[in-house]
Length: 152
Image (cartoon, rainbow, N blue to C red; front, side, top):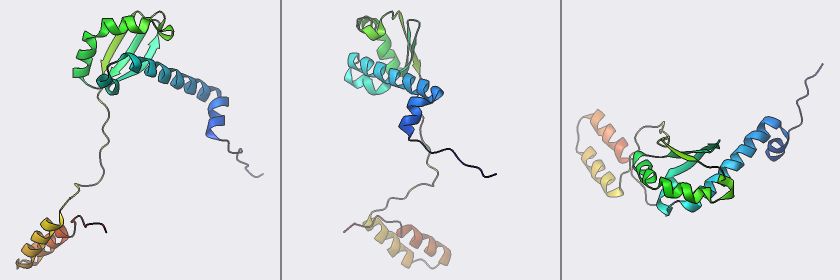
């Protein structure tokens, strides 16, 4: 008895047909639409710092990137509430909650990058040539090799 894997289907087809994925995709599209509506009511500077997290039972939860923007939005909360209530998608909106959640920062797995200009590399190489200790000289030569080479 041989195992026959199911036929591969395109991701778009899976998103439309598989019930759990379909519900998740639908929710993501809804939040994306609400995000666009929210951004249309926010000041341009605040748009990059405020995201729709959920909208249910008259409560709109917004994620804000830092406390500074949360404070600014709290001062404008009543105006924003009135403007959003005027939109059909936010019919029944009674409350806006703000939650501060800093963006996750991707950590680099490598060590510290060394950016040396060609002039700095030449200076380090010249210093290495005058050093008599072989270990220190080799270390300086390796460091000089990290220079940003001009690209032709």
